[in-house]
Image 1 (cartoon, rainbow, N blue to C red):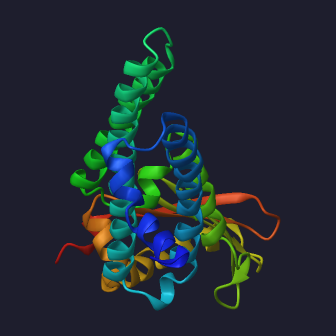
Image 2 (cartoon, rainbow, N blue to C red):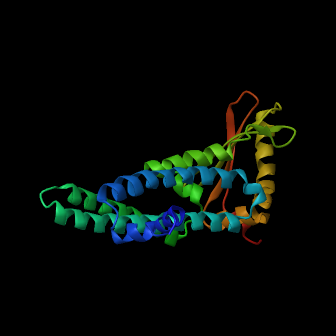
Image 3 (spheres, rainbow, N blue to C red):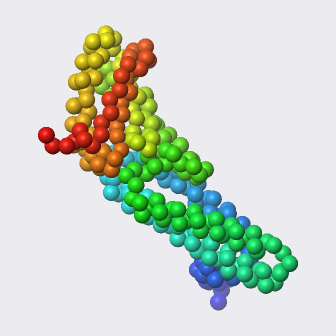
Length: 248
């Protein structure tokens, strides 16, 4: 067998060796567990950014399929690595009974397993919107994903959405989406009140007719619009919930 064929065979058996615990503990823990694991997690915000940036050209179904497929890859790899580290630790402990490194590695495996269980729980829960659920993230990875999402959503802002309205920023909380808009035309207080009254049914109609936003509304999310005048002073807000889409 040539050296090239040998290399291919070794590569093809890499995950099998990792699964069986045949890779030295320091390699399985630090290289395949820590280094590769962190690299995969860092790709998640990038993927999220790409999905959000192309939201207008992709259906919510396609976005969900890609996201769940990526989550499955992360979880599958995590399971293989954790099992491999545990088995490597068992072999290391036999050869080095006085060394506590194997025990420390197993503690890391338990913590990693709990993280995977939590990930399964999030997927099984089928939360209404990934962005909203990340808005109150506690882990560093999820906070990074959230920041990437917000950056993607606001990449082309501020921009004019019509002749008098400028969309400045979009934020996301667990309760839903928040749009910050400025009216560049002068209005007195009475006109501002009338404007808000006129805008609400228009916004509700648009959100309820859009498949993606309707899905978010039905999932319990809301769309809030906070308006400021030409002097950037907030003067009112409108919140659209799923009740706005109920048939009359």
